[in-house]
Image (cartoon, rainbow, N blue to C red; front, side, top):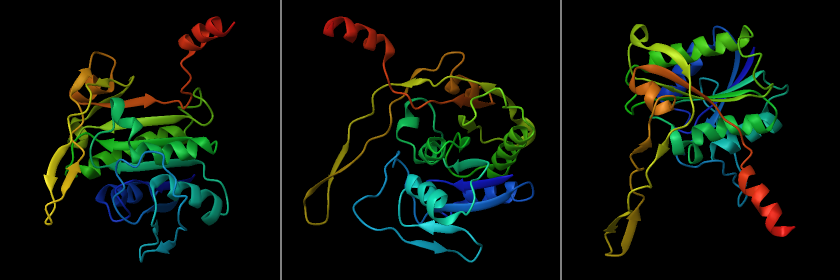
Length: 249
C-alpha cells in the first residue's frame, strides 16, 4: 500500500511519529503535516498567502498551513501517484460527537475523502500521549484489515473516525461500529487582559456529554472499546428539504 499520513498536532507530534513508525513496515508512507499545532482548524484552506513546503531530516514534509492544506498540497503538488489510503493522527485527545466539526485531524482525512481516496482519522481518548504506541498498534491493525479487504463492503472512498482509549494494547477491547454522540453547548469564553490592560478572550472548554447512550462513540470508549464511526459530508437536511419544497410549491 501507499499511504499518506498527516495530522493537526504538527510534524513533531509523538502521535504522528508513532503512527508513521507503526505503518512504515507494512506500507510505502509519505508524511505531510503542519509545521505547528493546528488543532481546531477544521477544514480550512489557506487562501490569503502562499504556502511553503519543507522537509525534515527524517523525511517528513511540513507546511506552514492547515491539515487540509497539507493533504491538498501532498496530493496535487508533492506525490507523483495517488495513495491507496490517507490516515490522520494519532491525535492528542478525543474527536467524538460534535468535536468532529472542529477537528483538524478529521479534516485532514476529509480532504482525502473529497479527492476520492479512503481515509481514516485516529485519535486517543485522553491528552498527554499516554500509551501512544498502543494506539499506533491499534491503528496499524485497522489499516491491515483495510488492506486485506475487510472494509470492501463500505463506500470506495470511505471516511472513518476512530477513537482509541489510552490503555495498554492487551487491555483495549475490540472495535465497535458507533454513531457520533452529542455534546451540550460549549462553555463561555474566558475573558482576561493582556500586559497592556486590553481585554482578550480564550475560547472556553467544549460542552459536556449530552447524548452518550449505547451505540455512541462516547459510550463505546468509556467501556474500553475502540470506536469506529463512518462519516459523510452531505449536510443536506433531507426532512426539512421536503418541507421546504412544500412551502415553495
